[in-house]
Amino acid sequence: MERLNRYRQIAQSIIDDYAKYKPSYGDVELLVISQLDNYLLISVGWNGDRRVHSTILHLRIVAEKFWLERDETEEGITQDLLALGVPKEDIVLAFHHPEDRKLSEFAIA
Image (cartoon, rainbow, N blue to C red; front, side):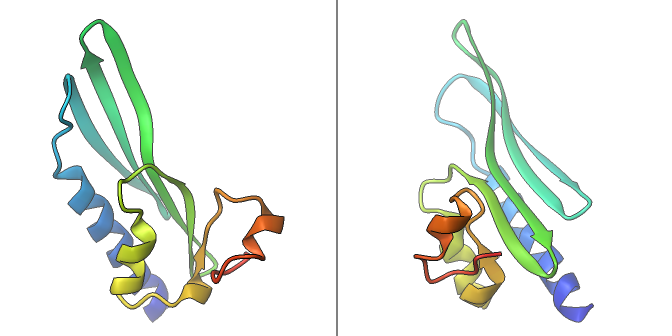
């Protein structure tokens, strides 16, 4: 339970940090949604006459592991997780097919 609580704090901290950045285009707002061990950062608004609505980051915690469902950040949050002491075996690159995950240094599931 201690690890789960630590991972929840890490996830919230990462998503809050990324939410502080202002998009460099349009009238776009970044929204943080955190519920049931799902942490999302979405962009909503307008860029000229085009609607903006996209998921930038979706991180979830499943069985005390981080599952990266979507990561559209410039550097990738994997490095953030590693820098905060999360071991590779607790990070699942869920945006990769399960067969392809076997080729990485990270957890398969």
